[in-house]
Image 1 (cartoon, rainbow, N blue to C red):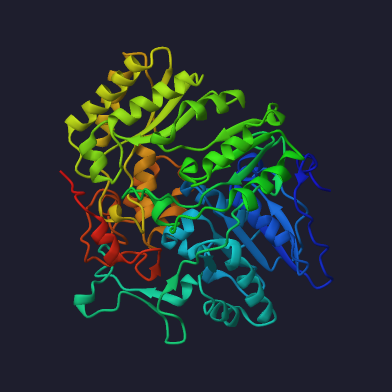
Image 2: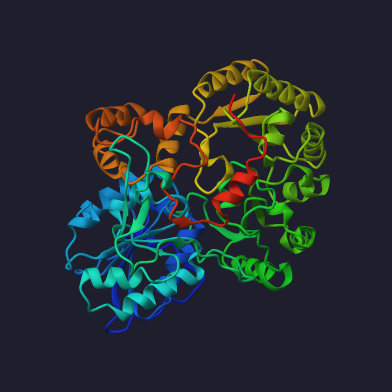
Length: 542
C-alpha cells in the first residue's frame, strides 16, 4: 500500500506504464520525504526514470517509501549534502545490501549515484558506489540506462566494464590509487609511480563531467503540501553563474553559464506550474543575471498574477532595483538574499567578487524603498588572504547599511571558507582562525541589533574533509556513522584508524601544492587544472 504522504502529490508529468520486463529500480534520497521532494534535481531525475516504460521505479526516503521490488536491479541515490552519507549507508542496510561495493555479488543491485556532491568529488564515497554519474543528468541518465539494458543479463564485472565506456560514467572499482605511503598524499608524477589509473588499458584513463547544453532547464515535476517548501513549483532560471568567484562550486562545477529563453521556455514552464499551485520559486545561482530577467519580471508583475506568491533565490547585488523590490513585495516576498562575502573590498578582489560597498548599500536602500522588510546578506570568514582588519570592515559595512536604510531588518549569514574541488581555491585549507572570527562578528553585530547567523565552524571542518577527501575516507565514514556526526566523532575515528590514512589536518587545514596529485585528478571538470591555476589570481594565505 502506498503511504498517505504520496497521495497529496500533484504530478506535472505522466508516468509510463512499466513493461512486463521492466527493470526493477529504486530511486532514493538519503533524507526525509519533505527534504527530498523539495530537491528540484531529485524531482527531475525521478520523473525521467518514471517516464521510461522499461523501468519499474519505486522511491525511497529515510521516513517512507513506495512499494519496493522483491529483487531490485538498480538502486540510485541523488546526493546534495555531504553529511547525508550516514543515510546512504543506513538505507543500504535497510535493503540488506553490503555497504562496500567490493562485497556485492551478482544477486545485488548496481548502486549508482549522482548530484552535486558526487560530481564535485566522489572519492570519499567511492567504496559505497558501483557507478557514479558525473555531471548533468539530462543526457547522462538515459545513456546509463540504455547501456545497462545492453548488458542486463551479464555478470556484474561485465556490466561494470561496459558501463565504464560511457562518457560521464565513473566506476570507482576499475581505478586504482597509489600513495606515497598510507598516511601520505597520492603519488606525484615525479616519483615514477602511477597516481590514479585504470586497472587495465580497456578502461578510459579519465572520466569527463557531462554538460547539458539544451535551451530548456529544469522545472518541478511534482507539487505537494508535504514538501519543506509547501506547494512550491520551482523553475530553474539560470544554470551556473557568470561571476566565477574563485571559491564557488556552484559556478565552476556547472560551467558554462546557461540561460533558457524567457518566452520559449521559462514562461511556458511557469504557466504549467500555475495550473496546480499559486506559489512559484525562481532558482539559480544568479537569477537576476538572466539577460531577459526584466522581461520575466514584467510578465510576473501582471495584475492577473496578483494572487501568486513569488520566491526568488540569491540575487546579484547590483540588480536589486526598487522595481524588483516592489514586484516581490506585491507577490508576498518581503525579503531578499544577496551574497557579499565580505565588507573588505580587498578580499572581494581576491575572490573575484566584482562588487563595491556603495552597491551593497544602494541595494538595501532600493529594497527598503520598494517595500521589502528585510535583507539577508551572506558572508564568509577564513577566505585565503584574510586578515583581522578585513573582518572588522565587515562590521563597518553592516553598520553603514543599517544607517543608510533604517528600519530594514538586516541579517548576516556567515560561513567559513571551505575548499571545493574543481575551483581555483581547491588547493587552500580551512583557516583555523575562522572560528574566532565568527565569534568576533557575533559579538560586534548582535550588540548593534543586527541578526547574525553563523554556520557551525565544526560543520565546515567536516564539510572540508569530505569535499577534499580521497577514497581512504570510505572506511572512516563507515566507522563515524556509529559514533554520530559531530567533529568529536570524526576525531575519534581518525584516532582509531591512525597509521592507515593521513591526519585530519592534512585533508582540512593544509594548503596543497598546485603540483600535487588531487583525489579527483582523473575526473575532468569544466576547466583544466592549468586553467584553474591561472584563475588563482591574487589569492594567498596569510
